[in-house]
Picture 1 (cartoon, rainbow, N blue to C red):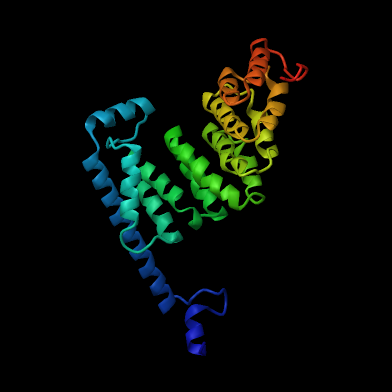
Picture 2: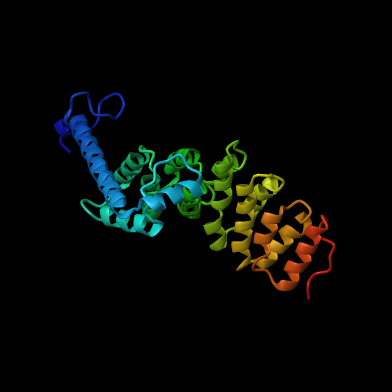
Length: 286
């Protein structure tokens, strides 16, 4: 690179282009282009969803989710179809364009736009990494409904956890003790994909044990959900973890947790739960 060209890409002080350089102008143009593209795509997504949706479904969904958001009345499958269609138009999304479009969709308090933002993240796992967990955490905190949180937790954070199993541990540890139960739920559901792929059970086990006595329904359900899915391939680990805790677990957790266990094991664990005692000393099922 010629000396004159080098001066355009870094300064003598900090590695940034000097103010007023072609580099800063190019960056400003790029930001404007990406932002304009995000607004255009977000408007197209909303327009299609409003055209597809029905007032009856909008009212029903709003009541079912007990939400203060606006609703267009589009189904989950319709939202996903529209998102795929619009995302395929124009230049392929890179990381910056994806993040900008997600942010743009999220700015408007409309359920389907926010669901579209979640689906965009789900559909582009290769573009996401540890640096995106700050954005995801903010979206979780602002979601305030399982309909948005669960996709962010299982598909978005879960896939990042698959790629970065060690690096993500302190983040999930922090989330597991957060005051916001939706963030705590995310720390649990983020383990679904890693556990299905054979990840160690210990991290989930520690977080679930700390939350097992909680009265929040969405925490109780999440613990049971992860146990239910894990036992499909690893029933002995679930039984070993659950047996000494049957007297602490809620009915919601237990009913989910034993769903796919062998009948004899499920019966033994549920009997101990109903009697409010640990099943650890019960004879194992034949």
